[in-house]
Length: 123
Image (cartoon, rainbow, N blue to C red):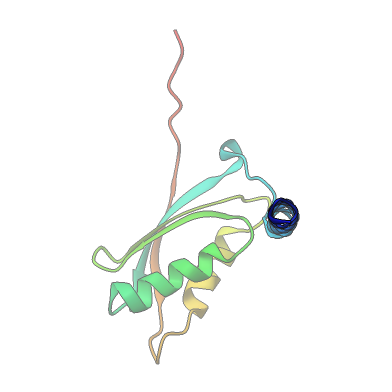
């Protein structure tokens, strides 16, 4: 009897784990190739702290399809964002930042610089 319960438990566990992975696969965005990405460095004015402002901006960006990474730094008033330009534009990235709402704070972008990746040359 204990053996049957053990087999039943293992079967249920296996089925639930498989279903869980299938659901996760459905919600994950398409893979973004690094070669197709753009990285921008922004100066962001109006942030008052890391935990509220900067982390909320970063969270909003990371919830957006096409954004690969987001490093928003309150202390440096900067944002380093990597995204797939075939999915989202630089202007849309900026709009997400300026539309972020934390209390009554408003954010503005005072400079934008596109970072060019340097590929090592092969001999």
